[in-house]
Amino acid sequence: MSGGIAIGQGVSWLADPAAHARPGRPPHLGDEHDATTDFARGPVDVGRRLFARRRRGEGRATLEEAQAMMNKAVAYLKKNGIEKTVAEANQPKGQFVDRDLYVSIMDGKNINLAHGANQRLVGKDLSELRDADGTYITRQRNEALKTSNSGSIKYRFLNPVTGKIEPKTMFFTKVDGYVVSCGAYTP
Image 1 (cartoon, rainbow, N blue to C red):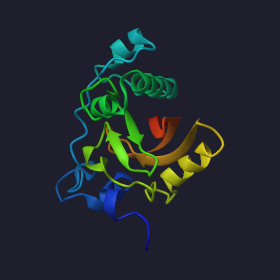
Image 2: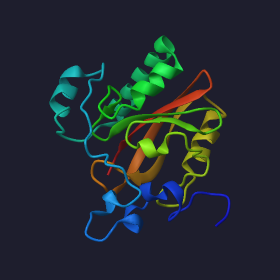
Image 3: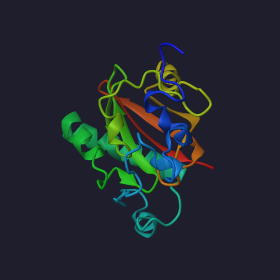
Image 4: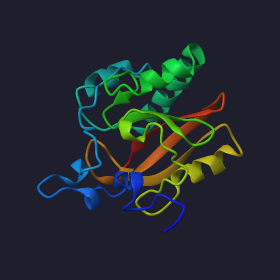
């Protein structure tokens, strides 16, 4: 296949981790995978008591929590600027990572500036990134952004906590030419 990142190429191990696993290791810890199971349980403004219980790894994040984390990152960006926000979003134990929630930030050219779950994606052009079913994730998001500065899309992706391909809803907002996103896995 030419022109795209497909299953078995580039960052595709996210969509199909079993294809990249080394013998004797779980599929989600293959050669190209960085350790993403040591998630910090940073606080989120909305629902602090709920997060206090869940920061210890209890339960799974909800769609509401994903949207709240994205909104928190957007507010942080507006207050602190892109450099500080990118630095904070790239901290595996920072305030924008909680269980299977993490913030990612892309520029207007689909270059991934921040990814709370996988530092290997930072600096990569994700224009051709596909999910487990071959859906172009970034293209789908960009289509939605043509009609509104925020929205959501659904696709199937590797959950960095469970190591399984799961349905995911990603929320996103465009701010000053950057796209801030956060999603929740919904098996």
